Each structure stands twice: as structure tokens, then as C-alpha cells.
Image 1 (cartoon, rainbow, N blue to C red):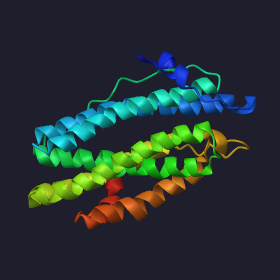
Image 2 (image 1 turned 60 degrees about the vertical axis):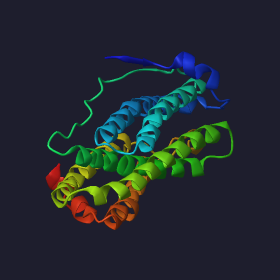
Image 3 (image 1 turned 90 degrees about the vertical axis):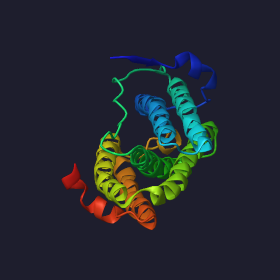
Image 4 (image 1 turned 30 degrees about the vertical axis):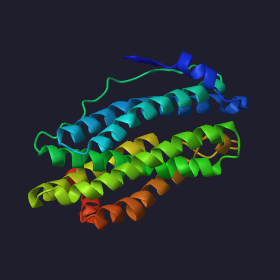
Length: 254
């Protein structure tokens, strides 16, 4: 498997942390996983920017979206810095990246709408909720400051998606909008599968864990479902998309 090595880049950024011996392995594993996920998200935004550009979308939006890739790589380095602070190395084996969905069955504008909804309105909105809750549980200190930097960027990624999708949906033809609604069920099923895989029930709240970003898997799952049902689905419905039906039918779509 390919190796992601961010150790040299992350070393100068390692925050001063006290990590109890009993929590070192969990802290290293948690933040190493985040390092991989955050760094890997860069190619997703590069793919989204390319789709928006191919659809003839506003150049300023395309440029902003492309800048998110650099932010995600920076997040990977910051997460690696926490691994180092916990006594580990910011190095991990990573799976080969999946091909970015081309949506060849759709027009260029519809393809961009699908990716925008899936990436920014779904995944990034969930990230805002989960990281925000984790940040709120942390005491003031260098790790909270580091997490605040990541969280603020994720807020920007989500807001971008909702803002641009609100302008993009009215530009779709009725058949394109109908296909987008059907695609939402697939995207929601994928989101659920991905989040549950990364929020294991075996992860339980441990004394001192909140200060290191070690959350309860069960509580995080509860927040995930609340975010989808109280924020994402109503938000998409306000854009005129049948997100409620898509969420209800996600199992069939999967």
C-alpha cells in the first residue's frame, strides 16, 4: 500500500500536550486516521472544482473550491502534528485513492450538482457538526486551537456547498433535477455507511479523552443522525429537492 509521510511537515507544528500513557495508543490511532482522511479529501475538492469548471460555472467559485484542497492537505499535517505530540510518527499506509465519480450519465451541470451536494452539503456539514461537538467538549489549550482551525475551514466548505447549490439547482432542467433527487438517495446511503464505519460503537468515552479528541462512538452516531435529519434533509428540501424521500429510500438505493 502507498505510504503517506507527513512527519517532517508536521513536526514543527506539534502542540504541547500531556497525553497519559493509557491514552497514547488511542490518541495516535485517532489522529492518524484523521490525518489520512483529511489529506485524502484534497483530491475530492480538486475533482469538484474540475467539474464546476467543466460546467462553465463562475470562475471565482471554481477558484475558491480549488483552494479547499490546500486546506485539506494542511489539515492532514495538523492532525499528523497531534500524532507526534502523542508520541507517534505522522506516517500511515493508505489505500489507493478511489476514482472521483465522473457521473457520465449526467450533464456537466448535473454532475457538478451531484458532487457538490454529496461533498459539501452532506459530508462537510456532518464534519462541521462532529468536529464542533468535539471542540466544545475540549478545554482551552493548544489542541482546541488546532481543532478550531480545522473546524473553521470545514464550516467554509459546507457554506460554500449550500450557497452554490442554491444557485445551481434552479439552473437544472426538470429531468436533471429529478435525476439529482434520485442520486441523493445513493449519496445519503454512502454517507451513512462511511460515517458508521468511522464511528465505531467500541469507541467509548474515557477519563481525560475529551481533552484529546477521543469521543464516544455511540454519541457521535446520534449526532450524525440528528445532523442529517434536522439540518441536511430540511436544507435540501428548502432548495426544492425531495431529500426526505431520498433519506427514507436510502436502503433501496444502496
